[in-house]
Picture: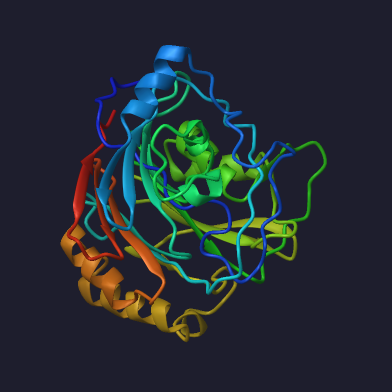
Length: 334
């Protein structure tokens, strides 16, 4: 797998397990103690550099951090989530094949968030969002070694090959285990996709190789898109994983199932309908500014951040609930 040099910069990890979910309590992904830094494969110097890179950039509060060194994406942390309204709106605007764009609102508890940049030795570099409350840290996490688990809990992100993925709650989803496949949490699978998949087909294969654990927690469905303009929705229908590849210039996802559901029924969901109407009008073409305006049109009172990922240029833009202006990040693309 070809690696590109990684430029030091802002890194963040946004909302973690339980994001975009309905009022439930997610089950732990492992038996490790809550927030225990089990993921790190760093030496002492790499730990110091990682924690020293933490910087507060927004009063949400939103932080940036660059994770230096390696981690084990297969270990877990135990997390719980309080009851909360659910939400999340995602779309991929793919009408301009030179400027494909992935966008999402994350709607959840008023927790601190992190923009995380990672570059594992055996995986693709990526930038992602994490809700660091689920690492056990507070509003001021300075020096907290539990931040070393941040790579384990991305709720959306983009890698250096232009592959983006995000999740949302789907109350109708159920995942029946397939014998012989390893078990992975509904959020952790996003880390595996970002680290190993360059295309939508490869991302689907990651889902196919694993059993997803929704037990005791919010069931999920996923939107994936890549730099070629390909896209897919991944859902779990009657216990079975199904992927529906895109055939048009855009794809959208909120909190209602889409696979096997007529488009008219999908649009009965207000947020899906607003997104669909605008992307129909534009032919699936949206730059970052237009995408952020569309996300604002479907934001809710508990929307924590809005983010866009440009799948060719590697640009990421983030606007938080503070409305304090947009922040821009650049992921070097390979």
